[in-house]
Length: 357
Image (cartoon, rainbow, N blue to C red):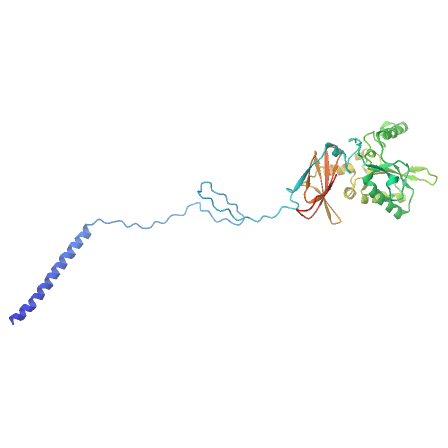
């Protein structure tokens, strides 16, 4: 009995000892925790959005690089832009003309205010030796610029075929200064100087000096040549000459502008499309020049005819700019510059350029 009590006695002591040790250990640990300083736990801080937030650019917006950036950003994608109206006026060539060229071409304005100095290379031909249509010429040695003989032949051929009239003759064509002076002096003796100057120009101021103008007459059965009145069948010229590049130079309703009396016999070649434009607008040559002076390469006078687009404009001085994508003709105006007539073509960067002066 005593021995059993001893057996149970030792386990109880061991358990009590372990409880005491555990109690002291807990008290020690808790005291260390209480004595240790509390550390602050850092929470992640959210970065506020800036006030001037840069939005993503809309298509078409331009983005400028910030010069303070260490690494430049990639360039924005290219923006599609509608092409400039055709033609693009950056595409032109420059032709340097001579001062003498101002007094060459089909569009020379010669009148009471603008004289013409006859050059040595006027390109005159004998009418009778050059004509291909059998029309009458009063004087054997009458001459005109060779460049107008083809349209003159065509006009005379259609007139004769249409009307059957073979009496119309070229009475006066190119005149030098001496011939013009002789004609003026005869008029002065007949009607006085003031009235004579309304029928005949001073030497140097006559269109006949250019080789581009001529006077019609009527050859009678006996051989005499009488005045051309522009009546009857010969009114055909007034109504149709513009189709061949010719104009009635001094019409009856524009004498205050031309400063010349009505001369139904006096025709002048200016070429196409200019005669068409003048006829359509009822302009005389002075008015046409005034209109074209207001137009430039960038703002040309545009004329449509037979599916062809003409751009016509004026260039002051001798540096002439013309559209690259065109066939063009350059004429001096006999005053201070050039008139360019350009036929606009579909753009072809490899096309050859043709031009005529």
